[in-house]
Length: 179
Image (tube, rainbow, N blue to C red; front, top):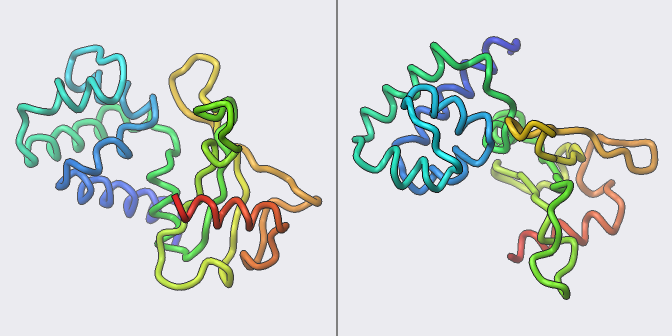
């Protein structure tokens, strides 16, 4: 599989995910996606909730899918990698991503780091025996997209198997999966 095949696969997955409105919050989570849709819809929605509840509420699923095709044809250069892409890559390549949202703080004083952690594992079978990549995510300074970077722990950012992860990360994964 080359880069073009992967991009085609990911774009097709978006089209399929647009059939179910419950997927919309995840699909429009990244600022670059919202900005691209703003261009196509000719309106400036400030956040994903506004885009979903106002911009898309009166459109049929077919109309929304057509808008997605328009986003691809006119705005694809402005779209950045997003969590939803990582979910699809996880499913396709049977690997997991451990992500810390940089800059996101605990929701309450007594909450732990778990509120800023995401573990993406969207394939059948145990993540403990498949590759895991450690990432951090932050919003770009211009607030137009998310940036992903690798976390290097013990000179590693990639683990052949989840069972090789440091104990503190395995503990965070278990806590995340219980949420």
